[in-house]
Length: 195
Image 1 (cartoon, rainbow, N blue to C red):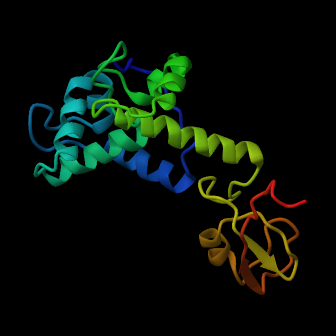
Image 2 (spheres, rainbow, N blue to C red; image 1 turned 180 degrees about the vertical axis):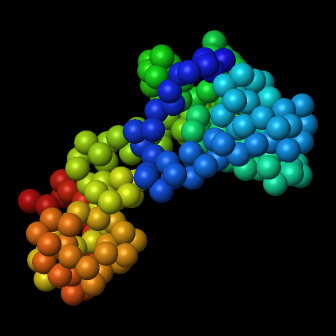
Image 3 (cartoon, rainbow, N blue to C red; image 1 turned 120 degrees about the horizontal axis):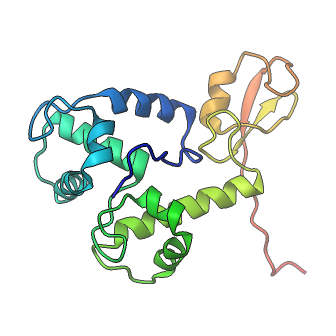
C-alpha cells in the first residue's frame, strides 16, 4: 500500500505533465465513497479503490468523467497498482523504488500473464527511457521525447521535433543565434554487416 507522505518518482515525467499532475492531485472525486476528497488523498489511503478504478477502465466499463481523470492521475503518478504477487496492492512506482530486483524480474518475463502485463510494460517503458537518458539523446526542453531535430543555421541538436518547432524563430537555447529553420534528424543504427 502507498505510504502517506511517500514521494512518487517524477524523474521520467516532463514539465508539462508535472503541471497537469499537480492540478490533478488537487482535483476531487465527486461521486462514490470518496466524494469530496482530493485525488492525492484517495491514492495515499486506498490502493484497493485505485486498483478497482484502473480495472474498470481497463475492462472498458463506463466511468464518470472524474473517475476517468482519477484513473489517468493514478497511471501518470504511480503507474498502476499491482494486483498479484508479493507486492499486491502496491503502486508500480513504489515497488520499483523499494524492490528494483522485482522490477527486473517482471521486465524479463517473456509472456507475462494478464494480471502482470501492466507492471511488465511499465518497467520496460522506464528501462527504455532511462537508456535514452543515459545515451544523452533526450530532449532538453520537455525531458521526455528523443532528440530528433537540429536548428538551422547553428546546427545544435538539443530538442525533439515538437519542442524545436515551438522554438523556431526564437534564439537557439545553446548559442542564442536566431533559429531560421528546424531540420528533422534520424539516428543511424550501427550495423555489424559493414566491413
